[in-house]
Amino acid sequence: MTGTLTVAGLGPGNETLITPEVTVAIAEATDIVGYIPYVARIPAREGLTLHPTDNRVELERATHALEMAASGRKVVVVSSGDPGVFAMASAVFEAMDRAPHLAHVETRILPGITAMLAAAARTGAPLGHDFCAINLSDNLKPWSVVEKRIRLAAQADFAMAFYNPRSVSRPHQFGQALDILRQECGRERLIIFARAVTTPQEKIKVTTLADARAEMADMRTVVLVGNSLTRCIGPYVYTPRRAE
Image (cartoon, rainbow, N blue to C red; front, side, top):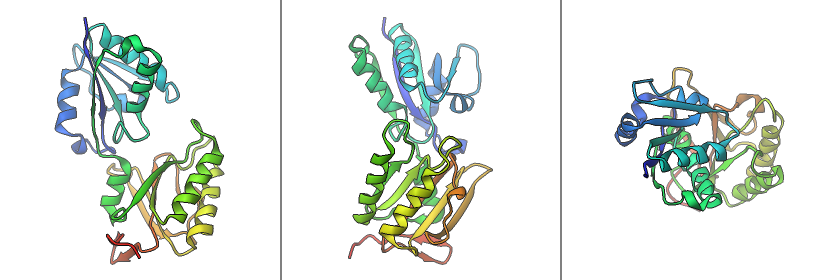
């Protein structure tokens, strides 16, 4: 007997930004699987079992979800933002890759509004031309790889979105990232700190690399850095859709 597995994005925080497609999937689910604070966003109801787990067990979480779906359950794995951006969609397919007997499970990925897009919309259009997204956590890759990607992206003049910039366990690395950006981009490059965007705790700060400090960011912050043409117009930040 085979059920279904849906991997869904809950958006950046505001409930109105959850897509109708995701809302329907959650309403039809028998089981919700995910990181503790994301599962906490799902209201309890009869016939629904919630499976909250810690943040560093992505593969175990994905395997458990696949096993439940294979047994006939309607399982939804929830992520914040978009599940394909530094989230659970990749973990589900990696779990399938490691356990091919689960690859027959009917699986679909439902997109969501990710934090960088919500932050960009709040401030104008800072990602209006070519951009890249880099996860600054070194949990799944060496810090040397992170540094190389920051430097090369800056040299290529991408606008950049940085996820997971600074945590209690690695308070100094974001400062190192800012140093690389100053070296490659100059001190006057615009940088945006968007914390808890779309929630009541939202805080947006637009400044320059000269005035940016590591303590301006935490794990609820997405950081956007403009390219060489990014500018302010009144309260807005935008990147022209052209290159020089």
